[in-house]
Each structure stands twice: as structure tokens, then as C-alpha cells.
Length: 378
Image 1: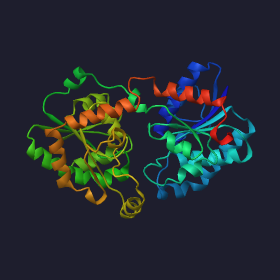
Image 2: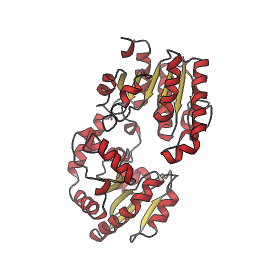
Image 3: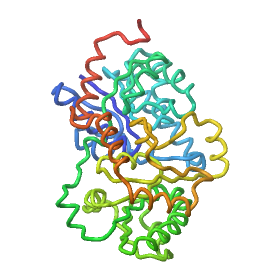
Image 4: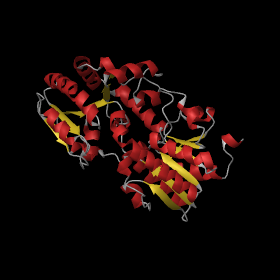
């Protein structure tokens, strides 16, 4: 069995590696070709070029690399068409991956699978119908996504969210972090996010620390923003522990924290896995804020709220992202965290916690659908 697989960023590399391991479990004869990072390479992929070439986000960042990316899209499509695999699996990175799939489908009937459904439930719902023109099968991370993909004309299986397979610190490991009220601060994993949020988070943290004398502020960082975070917190009015990228203590601090103040994103699910109560805050450039506000189709962007079908996690988005109300919300959650913990347990259960690992579920779904006619063929 021959699988061509493409991932364009670190999160996709993790999904791809788990999927590849699952495919090898069910089909020991499987071989892989394509593009991926170190985790996928460890599972047997010889990447055709460095995955980092595809890890580009934002219009300003993409434009200087547009020609190079377009050439890579053509290169991947030509390689797939010249030596057809049993299935093409593209993982997230839709601006690159779906363009490859479109070129492949324009001249072949190679089966195409896309891992991670577009967020059509939040905005731009027409993306699903457009995607259905060249994608046969979608592997979804959230249980409410399959009906939306199927309605657009694609097969779709919920395979579980990778957060349920992430290791969680034990109570003993958390206790080893010491005494005090731990406030975890997560201002984002991209420089633009940190630049917009860190100053406001800093003021909020100052107010929280004034109300909670034993507060300990801890900020985990990623490689791309570690230096920027250090620069930003240097002017805060409270002492801060900044964890380096890849810190072995990160999971313990997530479990130990009494409350978290976090940028919007999948980090809310990491916090939920550790049952850490949270407040979510986010802002963006003025123009993006105006456009997205008009297009947004949901009344919350926090994944715990969406999956649990509650609204227990306070969020401060766009113009509401102000330090004073954020600090008040953190103190309120700190005083009464149990409603959130109930919602977090529901969230993790609905995302597949306690069941088969997402990589195995994804592999099983790919293999079971290979021998069945797709919705498009029926």
C-alpha cells in the first residue's frame, strides 16, 4: 500500500505521525512519500523538502514566498500524478494542501483525504462545498463536524482530537511545583498575538496579583516567541516565571495552575485536559477584527464552550479585550471554578478521551473508506 502524505506545520506533523503509526499497525506493508516534519520522518517518511518551507501564515508573510510556494504545489502534484499512490492524505495547511489536491483531482481519480475539517461552523461556510470538488474524505477533530462535511458531498469521520492522547501530569508532579496561587498566562504562540496581547495581559496580571498576594505568574513559551515574551514581561509590575520552549515542567504547571489567562485557540483544550479553569482573551488587527466580526457565525470562539455546549468560559474578544474586565473575570473564576471543570470533563469525553487513540481511529477510517464508494460516487 502506497500513501502520499503532506503536512505543513508542527501540529500537522504530530497528526501525520500518529496517523502513519496507525496505518503501519493495520497495514505493515504500507510505504510513505510526501512532506513532513521530524515526527513523520521518524515514522518512515523521507520528506521531499523541509516542511518549514510551508509554515507561512498571513498575507504579508506569504506574498514574498508566493512563487516558491506555487512551484512546490506544482512539484507535489506532478510527483503524485506521475507515480499514483493508493491515497493522498493532506493534513491541515489548506492554502497549500487543497491546491495540491485540486491539481491532482483535475487529471486523476486518486482518492484524496484531508485531515482537519475547515471551521465552516464558525465562518465562511461555502468553503466546504468548494473543498468537496477535490476532496473525497475528511477526518474531523470535532464530533459536530461530520454532518457539515457530508452535507457538502464528502465522506467524513470524527476520529478524535489529538489533545486526548497528550500526556497529563500526575497530581504528584503538579504538587512538586510548590505552594501559592498559580496563574498560568498564555499570550499566544505567534509574534503578532504576543505583540497585541502581552501588554494588556500584563496590566491584568498586575491587578490579579494585587488582589491575590500569593499569586505566582507562570508563562510557558514556544520557540518562535520566547525572546519576545521575555522582553514584554520585563516591564510588568510583577515577577514572572517564563518557561523555555520544550520545558519538561510545562505539563506539571498546566496541572498545577489554579487558573489560566489564555489567548484563544487550541490551548483551551490543553487546559481542559488538565482541568485548569480559564479565561480567554484575544484581539487582532483592526481590519481583521471588522471583517471577522461580520463573518462570524457562532457566539463563542472558545472550543470548550463549543464542544460542551455551554458558555462557562468567559471570553474577551476584539474590542472587549480590555485589562480591567479580564482581571475581574480571572478573579471570579478563581473563586468558583467548578462549573468550568464540569464542562471540561464533558469536552474531553466528547473529543474521545478514554477511547481508541486518534491516530488509530484516523488510520482505521482511511482504510475502511478505501474500498467503499464515496458520497461523490453514489
